[in-house]
Length: 101
Image (cartoon, rainbow, N blue to C red; front, side, top):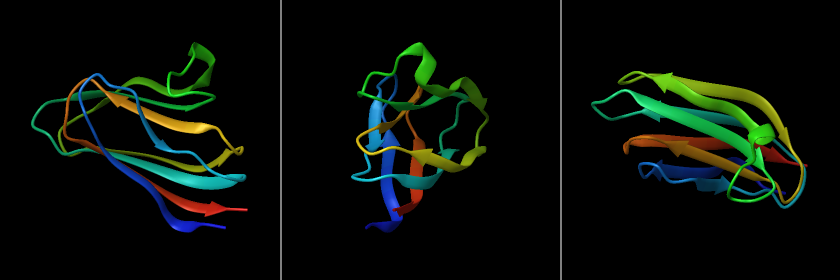
């Protein structure tokens, strides 16, 4: 049973990135921060694969200004689902922390 920091990634521009895949049911918080010098449009999904379908998105092209943070808390994820993040620009960091049951 893992707990604490479960996944981290610095997103590349225009690339779906699987940040975390739990081995059992997990409750997590997801934090995205725009560290760059341009506004970012971010996407966040809990998906069956590394390429989310339309129904799997929690956030879609949500705008993060320079230095802005988006945090989703208490997200419950079933085993083998993927937390997938994407940004239209580089320099967006993703941190996932929580616990697996």
